[in-house]
Length: 242
Image (cartoon, rainbow, N blue to C red):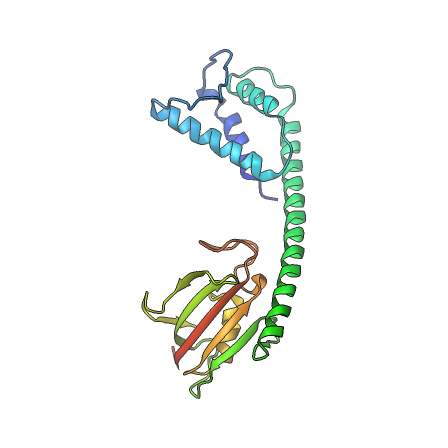
């Protein structure tokens, strides 16, 4: 199992002891902003920030005083309360606990998302009988049916698009903003849109409603939060060979 960033940061500190000199007792004052006067100060702050962020991201309850004591003890080459083997064993156990917590969080988020999307799509279908459900699990509405060549994997699609959230907020589009997209229909396209382009013919305009698992999933992407349901309006102009 790969080590977490927290484990890597702690091992970095342990490995850095040979370059550090004892400085005695350090008093930590969090009531005022620190003065970062040198490059070493700035790098030290960045390292501390990284460690703190990764501790928070583990979701594990931590004793801050013990963490600080471990850092000071290690950097000043004082006697450790545990052997290196014991420390590494605990770091491996930390990796396992972090993985378990992440899986629990993912399952919880997924369950909430599925319930929210189920209610959203049920309401959508009740208000607009023209919307259909695909075999893949996304929904679509034909705004204009074309008669040109049908999209297929390995072919090139020329299209404009508008992407929005279910509240109507547009997060990206080419209409009037950017050049028309020319893209090979392949697995580099998000799963729902990949299948959607393969259902369209050139000259068509479709509106797709993608559940998060067929869009940007649990990770999201820039400007799109994790577990987001997204809507794409696609105007497909042409389908050509590569």
